[in-house]
Length: 148
Length: 390
Ligand SMILES: Cc1ncc(COP(=O)(O)O)c(C=O)c1O
Image (cartoon, rainbow over the protein chains, first blue to last red):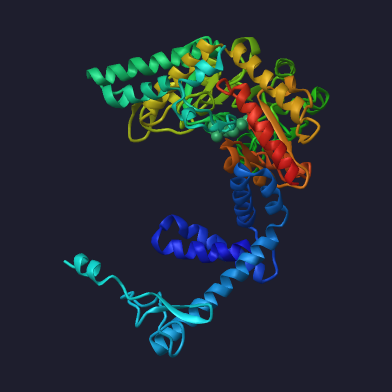
């Protein structure tokens, strides 16, 4: 499972850094083998597990033991979290492309995909059942200062 | 011997690393690094072929290094010391230079490093037999000797578990059988005094990088009359006295075997490393390593599976082990990431032995003069923590 996370992370890093490309390739090989119900031959999963456990052991041998014993479960959780956040991000992109805001039609809430970073009309939060405006727009004055 | 004092000469140790992978290669003291720099800074020229001052200086330094090695190994003359790239090249030199014929047999132990196994396997294709005896088993060794055995190519000390063979006795038996002996001294030369004359060994190979010297430099000792008889391995410039378009006359040993421009910085640095080791004293190094190995064995002997003899005295500088239920690489990576402890894991280039014993490999701690009791206590704690993971 850890190889799936490695594949995603190393693939992104590989775009910028040549030294991560062999690792991304190795992770791909490992994921491919696992998907075809074979064992990861490259040992990447063992290496990553040992590296993580080693780093934790530095701080706490007890936590390291829990992680070591349940590494596959932790890996599954991380993969599920990663898939969940990817889906959520994809949904946001879809909304942004379709409605101009990542939060869906009719929403004026802050959207991270908005390159200008500007709020359409403000950020609201619910407080005691009442809508309360807590932050408004970007600091226009600092924006002016930053412009050449 | 004071390891704390010795450590001050090793810049890399100030970074807090615990270096326990000395069988692979040792660290270099500042004296060796400075000597290498001296070549590049002060006389970075060709030796042997240039009559200018810089060239002369290179010759002088190379000859000096050769003499240092001659003295260290107690060879009869400096010309018996040939500089190679490493132990592997030294062994290949003999494998390719000795005039072995179809039907001749080369004997090796079952614990050889691939460097002293594969060169002989290559000869099998030419009709030369390669036979195996059990490491350290004199009876088995004797039983394999016969008039066809022309060469014993074996190691003195194993890189896998640190155990040594009764080599003097084996050399005597080999000689009375009319066989020559090539000793792979890669793991013995850094940890004990070697007297090639006393051993009466015919050829002896070792590497500079396992003896505090630079990487890419090694040595082959050979009895002079044998070196004169055997043909050179790699030929070309520097090996030749005279040539026409059809023929050539080779120089005498050692030049006959040192083809092309040499690794001068490496040779000079190797000499300096040997000087450094001599100053500490090989017997002191040996005692110190056994002391540390005793502590490792006492603390971990019952908790891990030791590869090789149980008694630390017989394993010298090496503590090779496995933790039940764990992959050796896993252990090595955790040691590296938790406490910056560098060890080696895997088959240590002895796949044949591990395959024979149905084992995947081992974790290998290998010690040297600069390792301290504190290093060992940290390693023990880290290994105990790892054992608790399994
Ligand atoms: C026993 C033994 N022989 C030969 C070698 C090969 O040495 P090198 O790589 O320096 O040629 C080694 C290296 O670890 C070794 O331990």
